[in-house]
Image 1 (cartoon, one colour):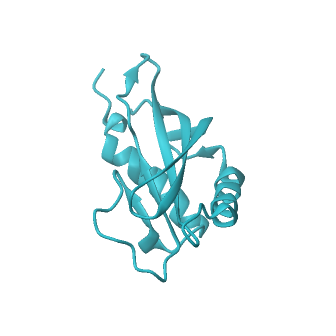
Image 2 (spheres, helix red, strand yellow; image 1 turned 90 degrees about the horizontal axis):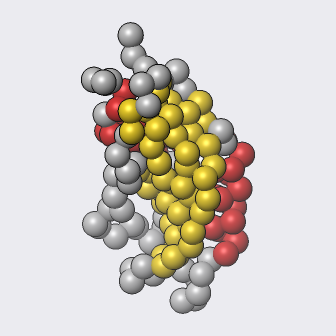
Amino acid sequence: MNNKNYDIAKIEKALYDALRLSGILHNSQIFMGTRPKVDIPSDKDAFIVVSVPSDVIDMNAFGRFIARIDIYARDKNGLKNVTRLSELHDKVFDLLPIITNKYSFDLMGELGDSDSLGYHVTLINLYAIAKITN
């Protein structure tokens, strides 16, 4: 089925808008698609990346896929900044489920990791549905 709601960029934008409107972080600290390649200014201790790391499976009445919210917090004294990660984690959980006129997102599970740039990350996977367009 040809459904314009299956456009990955539109899905990421819908999730981005939901987080932006919630005020969880300043708009300049929320990104779509992938982690920014540039370093985040030192006065910004956290940022979020929203993505759709899967294809959209057409179920005839709706599209099913996985979306993700990655919460990054700058390490503190070389260690995981548990306080900041937990604060943002809880704010994201307070938003779930996220339901728009075209998409719905709800908790699937989560993982933790770190990168080589001084951040730890909580990856929140979301079950997601794209509604049929007219």
